[in-house]
Length: 104
Image 1 (spheres, rainbow, N blue to C red):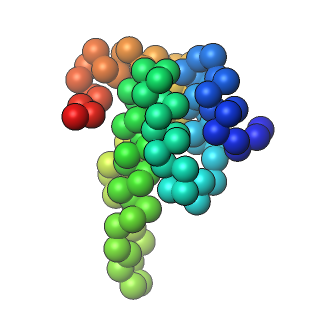
Image 2: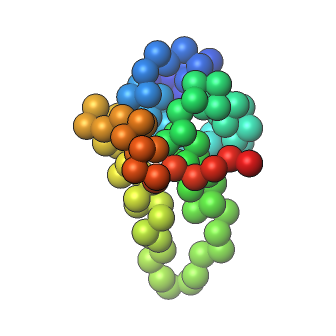
């Protein structure tokens, strides 16, 4: 799989977009945050936007010496996106239950 933003834009399904997001290096998520966000907004993939925001929040939080740090919010975001990538859920199912956040 290629980790070029064009490949994300070329994804035809939410499942493909979710798989791309879950496999891309974290450094690319931060370095190309705005381009990835624009691609997800254009595709109206709200669960992907939720995931991107959660990863950015997680990757920029201060870490504590000697403590494992795995907050619930990142596990939930990754799990939600994994279910979409595996075809077990759709973005609509998540937004219909109110799990998506607003992007003011």
